[in-house]
Every structure is written in C-alpha cells, then in structure tokens.
Amino acid sequence: MSQPQPLVLYDIPYTVSGKACSPNPWKARLALTMKGIPHKTIWVEYPDIATVCKEIGVKSTTTPAAIASGAPQYTLPVLQDHNTGALISDSFNIALYLDKTYPHTIRLIPEGTDAFQAMCVDVFVEKMLLPLALIYAVEASESLSPRSTEYFRRTREAAFGKRLEELSPEGPVRDAHWKQCLDGLTVVQGWTNENRNGGESLYIMGDTPSFADVVIVSILICIKALAGAESDGWRVLMEANRGHWARLVAAFDQWIWVDEESTKP
Ligand SMILES: N[C@@H](CCC(=O)N[C@@H](CS)C(=O)NCC(=O)O)C(=O)O
Image (cartoon, rainbow, N blue to C red; front, side):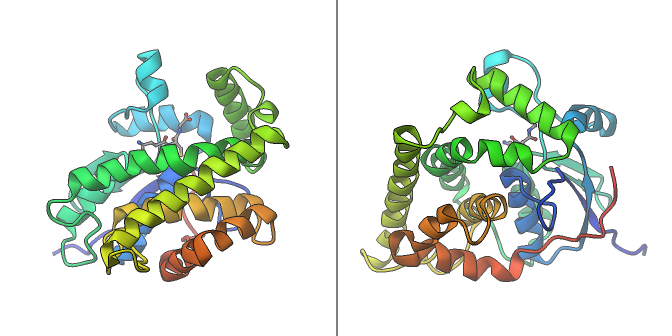
C-alpha cells in the first residue's frame, strides 16, 4: 500500500510571523491541527486566488459580495487530499469532509449539529468579525505583499465605496464598532453559559471544542497577529467577559501552529 500523503491547504501569505493571518483559512488549518492530520501549505497571493482555483479545478464559493455581483467567487481556504482525490473549497465544507474522512479524531461538527454549527458561523461573522474587520482593515491591507495589498485595498474599497481609512476612523465610529463587537461577544458568552445553567462554560458545546469555537478563535488570533499582543485592542478582547476569550484561546494554543516550511505558490 502506498504511503499516505500530507493534505494540501491553500492559504494566503501575510507578512506577520507565521504567515497565516486570514480567518477563513485559519478555520481549515485549525481543523487539520486539531485532528492531527499531516498537511502542508501552498501560499497563494490574493490576486492569484481565482487563477489557481480554476487551474486546479476547485468549485467557486459563494460570499455575500459574490451573490450581489452574480460573479463566481474563488476563495481560500481550499483543501486538496491526494489520498482520496478530494478538492474542497469553503472552510465549513472542509470541516465536514475531514470529519467524514478522518473520523477517528476530534469531531468538529458533532452528529446532528450541522445546522447549529452553520448558524454559528453566520452569527459570529455578524456579531464580531464584521466590526473587527472594519477596525483592522488598514492593518490587514498593510500586512500583505505589495501585490496583495493593492488587490485587497482596491477590492475592499470598491465593495464598501470608501477608503479603508474611512471604514473605522478613530472617534465615535470606531467606538461604536468596538461596542458592537464586545456586545456581540457578551451575547455569545451568555449562550455558551446556558450549558451550565448560567455558570461558566468554555466551549459553545460545553465540554468539547467544535467548529463554532474554531470560528471564534480563528478571528481572534488574526487580530492578535495584526494588532500585536501588546496592543490595546488585543488587551480589550482578552479582558472582555472576565477573560473568557483569553481562556478559550489558551485552550486552543496547542493547535495554533503553522508549517512554515511549506510550498511556494
Ligand atoms: N465561505 C468561505 C469564505 C472564504 C473567504 O471569504 N476567503 C477570503 C479570505 S479570508 C478570500 O479568499 N477572498 C478572496 C478575494 O477576496 O478575492 C469559507 O468559509 O471558506
């Protein structure tokens, strides 16, 4: 029998330490590290994503922007499994695939929770990712290669109809974004504590981590990389809800690593 081959994760290179700083690819990366599945990374610059996806023949994904424009949208992460021939786009689909194909490892989407987990993805985007993406849009664009910076700025400014600097200027607008994010986190923690009848619960599903927690941790660790561990923003997030999110990130620490020797695009 031939040796199992490492899976291949397509991700976007940032200039931050460890290179990985994109929340959606991080969801797939954490899914792989939590399951202990050997993998390597192919790094793809933003303007090359569509070309690479078409070349390897992966399906386009849908995003709100894609639905609005009607154009097919190609996004990362993409996962390629040479052991089975599978080629999958969309982080949720990747988690489903890994659960099905590698069942003797942590299950990310426990039996019967597909709808709940999918709902969590959407709710967390609205409650915390969107305000944080606005607050950190400039830092995100400046943490890419020059080609990707130009692409990121051009596409995001076209989508929002504003310069990145105008999305969350310091003052009342930025304060409102922080309030939206922190209020959102408080609501999510309240739901989590329903597991203990109002007492402290670390994971959305109680005792075991699942994809819903992966979504939150992926967003948080990107903010840490963009803003810096010493930044006020990171401190605010880690102190929120009496350190709940700091405890969640600490619990995931064992799985937060990047295979730095990975393949070039
Ligand atoms: N629903 C997809 C969304 C993926 C997504 O939006 N990825 C972004 C990077 S975080 C991307 O590849 N964008 C491509 C572009 O902006 O052209 C998933 O969960 O994987």
